[in-house]
Length: 143
Image (cartoon, rainbow, N blue to C red; front, side):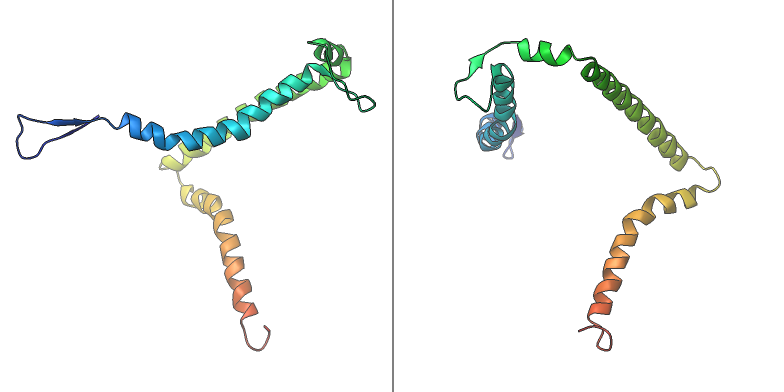
């Protein structure tokens, strides 16, 4: 809510911004739902069906497809490895990032070189691009 006063502090007009903002966000919300949520729901529906290429009719099997897949030891092992790798890699990346951020904020010697090492990979492609275009438009070597 926004309070507007026109010179008189005793009398204020109250403007509600909730409704116009919701109306303006509706198309975006519809697109997000249409392109992300609906396909996920459709895949979930298909996962509960018995789909085969040799016949057109679908049959509802419920959770049987999941029971079949999870009964395979190699699938369960792959899921365990995926969860282990995901948790470990996120934890390590978070700790390394936090350590570098704390080091950059400290007054330790050599932090300038660390900033250079962090910024240089972002700057080098732009420099290479600029040199490439300079060589392309160079009369003796470019065309």
